[in-house]
Length: 329
Image 1 (cartoon, rainbow, N blue to C red):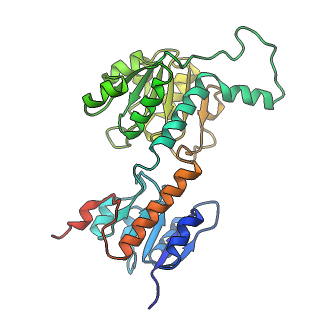
Image 2 (image 1 turned 90 degrees about the horizontal axis):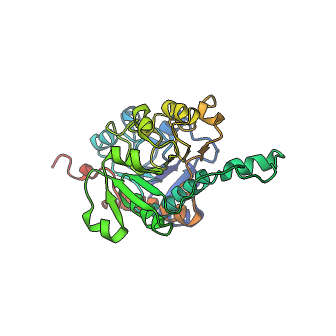
Image 3 (image 1 turned 90 degrees about the vertical axis):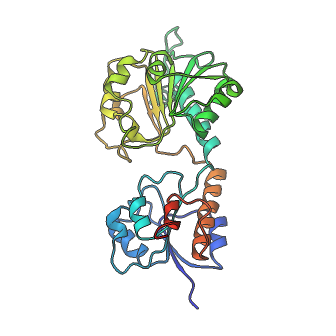
């Protein structure tokens, strides 16, 4: 009896691959660039399962491919913005993802961006590499203190809460805005609920931790930047589409806010002609908030757990479209 076939759209840690080897035949896309939609569709629909990445567009057209043998999608990420879950469900394809595994690692990175932007670390590094070493002076590369500052968290899920715990070590005042109050956590973490406007008006640092949805698309735009302090620093490790990048560029250039540091852009990769790339008070990382070796290995193991469960006819341990299991019942 032949083994199930799996197409994997990028290399994953070998320890996780070793768990697949006895059970499946797999093919891994080895190029640095993701497979084209044509190659992705051809390979995936000739396979029993697909191990995908956030950069793989799995839209309704993808799932509508005739003659497909695809039964399972296991995504190597928490988010599934790239997947049309309704289309997958209609075709009775469960979609796995990797929630919960990158909370602490992403919170570390968000706080790292905050420190780097506040203290102008990237600007200083760039000057040194360009052969610039300005004489010491009272105003040379002066930034903003993180300790004792006010941090506003927009979104207070697992990652937002983890950032709040880190902020306590810097004696920060922490405000949060979320769809619901978290009274049980307010005393434990020393945080206070605030409206979105209060966050924007009072915070020295604003860190975004919300899902991208039609309601949150460009949640932070021209009007929101107008409400921020001139010394405010924006941090985004959520999704690029939450921020209007054109409005952000104007706010940074005109001194409406002091700086920004992001791990996500709209689109990704960021366009070469984006005005954000020319601004010294803008830090842009290439979507690497979860990129610690330990976290990526845990993500790989969860993705493999989802694949093996699906291939064995079991419910995926971490399923992004659980309605697939009740469809038609």
